[in-house]
Length: 138
Image 1 (spheres, one colour):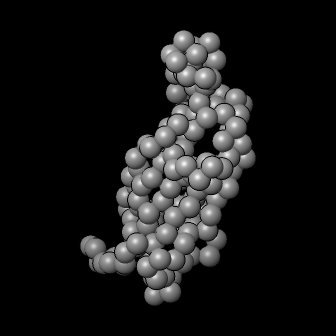
Image 2: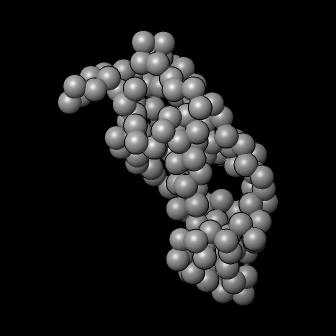
């Protein structure tokens, strides 16, 4: 990993994108096991349909984990100072999620040179599923 330089970063610079394979039942089951999120709406088709959904769908925290991966493939985890998201839509089975972001601010705080980045996930239709921001010390 090549650490980005504060001096080289400019407002508007994109983060390296992260494209993921289509969401499938195996991914949901594995994330449920790893995270301890065994909510049946993410794992049990019958339960999801009784709740009015067409099928199971991805855990919101799975999408946030993908955004964490986007960030930590760009900078070491120890450089993250904050990481916040808003869930804006459901990630259904078959959605191919792309994670992206861009630098929106450069500033100094507590003696560190930092950047604020907007981050998001979007499906193959360009629909934002999760939007948020992070502050990274460079």
